[in-house]
Amino acid sequence: NNYENIKFNNALDVGTGSGILAIALKLCNIKQTDVCDIDPVSIYETKENCKINNVSVTVIDDLDKIKNKYSLIAA
Picture (cartoon, rainbow, N blue to C red):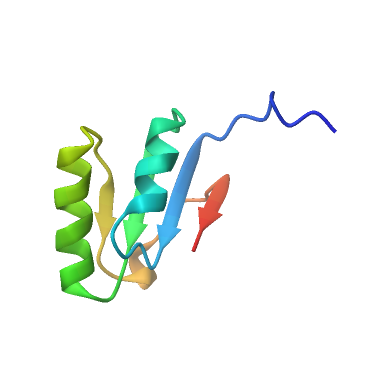
């Protein structure tokens, strides 16, 4: 099993909380990373932590609005 060559096109972090998983995904060169959380404080913290780590994510405020297919989902 050689996992070094696996490439993910995009990712979704469901229940992002502080955004730690989304930030890690971005730092692993996943270009499109979306986040979703029902807690507005979590979304705020995710945005702040992304600024600190110089990464950008797309915030989706409602799971029903998700239209993409993802090659990786974190929760």
